[in-house]
Image (cartoon, rainbow over all chains, first blue to last red; front, side):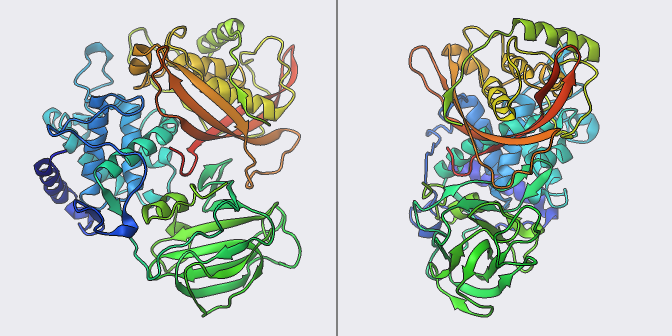
Length: 351
Length: 200
């Protein structure tokens, strides 16, 4: 995308989304390499050619990638979190296969148009507006931001709240593709956000190679799992992911002196650390080495892996909360993706 | 469960049963209508025996919920543009491991924006499925079981073109259903998909 187009999109989106109370400071499009080392994105990337066209990526054509890039850029401008970009791109994958669809004649679904199959008769805009991908994306985000708690909703529910589809669960199958495409585009455009710089930087919660990723953040089996599980042998040291203050350290279950079980509620031996607006929570430890009120450094050992509380095997359940206070389900964010955004590759360090 | 490469299976009987199921539940859209998407619906795990029999895979016994989930995932992530008529075919194959309610949603025609590029390269999905121990899995009962698998699917063209490998966690909810004339079987009653954290 050319610089002028990026600026124009950003300005338009800012005006349209201004009532939503979003500022421009939460996301930074880095044009100077290394401007904020902690937040430099890594991984596969793509960038547009000089004429603004994008190369094909994965199973998506240049045209489709270009439309996804517009959706991402529109979301990044006013500071919508990356999860919103994924929701929007996945929705467009389902609704239009990332094609800016005009009227399809007899095959058209009512008066649906464009990337998101928005309907003029339902107040989405005029046909000409809806067929402008930047406008369509802006309209999508505007309604998404009005959904209470959308950042904690599964993709299907967040998209459905906006789209009112007859087949809401269909959005789920696009989450992996949308995440990959958003990552490639955001890295190529050097779009970063949530650059929560902390003194001393960030550290892995368990040593590299000592753990495997087991249960991820998200919905399954009619529940929602609010953290990432890292399976590791009992006694593996648990490290603070950043410097901060321990705000809670103790047993959160009825007992923590015996192995946990699925019948025992609670997180077992638990530590909560305030890193200054960002919180981390570590569950199911065998023992703790810190106490409430203690200052800790990044990488400091705070306890050891165990299986206390609601647990059937040795693992660390890691939650990231932003913003804090409070440490509640409503402030929990997907930990692996969030930490990757600040430069900590928890998935890459797994065995 | 170890890594296993997808094996194709005969779906003639399953497809016929699916067609009957579609007709019975009225899910078929009018010819030429823009196809709606499938709905991998969440489900109640302990559903009562289905009134309509879902399609089945001849000779398969449906005794092991882990194997049923494994085969369901392999079928759902199967595609061969040199053979299949479209992206719905994989779902039709998966319907052979689903209960009646889920099968009815899987047989709805679907669209897939990747299909044109795959067809251009005469690609098929190379899919690997392996069991995944999810530490949050509920405890099984006599009528419900919970399994997870890790699916890695890569589109590969006949002349060497390769798309991204997508790694997805698929969580199955399985119901023990009694089918008329067949007996009790473990069938997938619902599933959720999530990208593996950090996977490309």
